[in-house]
Amino acid sequence: MDWQRRFAGAWLVLLSVAFLWTAVGTAGELTLDEALSSMEAGNDTLAAAREAKAAKEYEKEAAFGLHLPTVAATMRWTRIDEPIEIDLSGIHDAMSFLHGPNPITGSPGDPRLAYVPAFTMPVQDDTFVKGRITASLPLYAGGRIQAANQAASSRVQEAGAQLRATGNRLMRDMVTRYYGLRFAKKVVEVRASYLEGMEQHVSEARQLETQGMISRSERLHAEVARAEADRLLKRSVRDQAIAETALVNLLAGEEGVHGTIHPVSPLFLTRDIEPMDYFVSAALRLNPMLQQIDEKGVQARAGVKAEKGTLLPKVYLFARQELVTDDLTMLEPEWAAGVGMEMSLFEGFSSVNRLRSARVRTSQVAHISAQAKKDIATLTEKLYHEVVAQVEQHDALKTSRALAEEAVRVQTRAFEEGYATSLDVVDARLTLSGVEIEQLQAVYGYDVALARLLETAGLATAFHTYRNDKEQEVTF
Image (cartoon, rainbow, N blue to C red; front, side):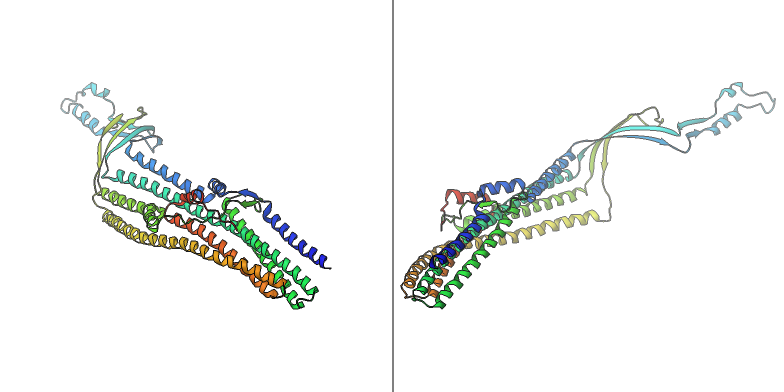
């Protein structure tokens, strides 16, 4: 019977390991660099940020076009109610009176008067076609064109900062989810090891019960502990599946990719990082959010310049050439060119109030910028302390882990010799697995906190330097 129990216990462990390998063991290997490349190539959020920047670049080119002349062509076919004529019949009648019969002699008037046509002059037929090319070139616009170009350039810079912010945030999310899956797999390994230890403990408890060295309750306690270990393992496997789903979603993988990811880049921890002032200084210079606020300030100042320009005259060159000359009237030239000027004299004080509003916006942005810098500096300090705290936590757990490993060895030997209870062995093994998971949690927390710190400092890409150049692989 004892060999049957051992076989049953070994078979249960084998099934657990087989389930684990079915879930994760056959997964395709994926490094962090490959995960980041896949995300950058297929993530829709990042693609949308790139398109937003491209749109702002086109708007900048459109603003530059304000410096150039505008040329337009028009063509119209028109029909009016009746032809337009100039009626000079009054002049004809006056001439007839002056050259009519002699009132005294009755002799006829000047016979040449009969050849004088009716005094009606056609001006425009009732159907006509007009075609024209017009051109205009601004000479002076009160600074409005320069302001529009300055604002457009600033919006491109703002979109670039937004793109960097999106990329940095997604990189931080990738680090969190990639190492989250790595952490979840490591926890599964710890839980599987704990279950294997409980299986061995149950087998030993059954042998000792058979030999009469421990009571039935001791053996039952060991079996309860094994059942609890199995429950913890299954929960860890479910947590791993959730972590894997989160990573797949960020990778924007195709359907069917789920369950095929095996992160191979190890969790890491290094103590070789720059002092806190380095990161605070970098954050105040490179943080994308602060850069976006700065660009808002540039745009607000450009808005002030543009509103001032509305109070000044606009001077421009213009030229016009008629394309269809057959239907031109005697009052319309075939071409014209000159200099024009436009200036608003009164708009109900709307221009003045828009200028005041623009000035208030510049002050508003200045206040937002000042507060944002304080918040970013504070957040950077907080994240730096989190990184340091995770290193301290990891180091503190080294001693605890060594003590827990020794306790497992001592309690197991004592239980085999009848000097310790099953509860002592279970507690020792549970403590050891708890310390191992806490130490894993500290390393995972370090990686996530470092990614967040570098994101806030505007140094997200430097994560590879800490991971590759200064990497200290953490194994358990």
